[in-house]
Length: 217
Image (cartoon, rainbow, N blue to C red; front, side, top):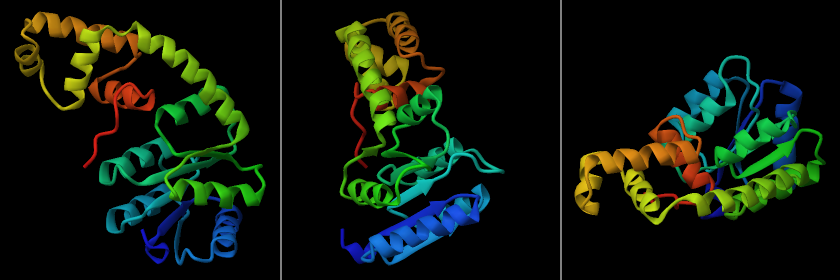
């Protein structure tokens, strides 16, 4: 990707924070020429619908729309888009939710401005950037997930792979030469083991835990 083609959208409802982020990008990453801003969820969604961005830097606490909803809309339009969350919330449950949503970076607003530029550069280069506490939480989750992945049987992994490919129960049963009741049983076990509420949640959780890969478009 040519640097001049990179487009970034910064989203925050606090104008001082928003302008500060923009200044950091413009001063520390002068090669990036296309930097847009949005001060509300609705404004962000309008820009997301009308333009294509390579990277989003999001505040999660917007007055009109939740940051999680915006992440979903971004992923629907462009699964390859990169997302960094810039937040003041450091609660462990909140950090876990962000990690499970498969964002590419997590920053706390108390972080040094040089780290913001470093995070943007690293994520645009295809990597990830988590502030130290978020990285600690992610490491704990990874160790827990490794144990949880071992709990999935080979047959459950077979079913999970086919669910992620969009196949229904009957199609999976035919491919695996088992009954639909057996497939339904595997589905229930998968939902329970991965603590998923529905199929979309099951797939997203499995991707975020590295159990199945992100499908390429």
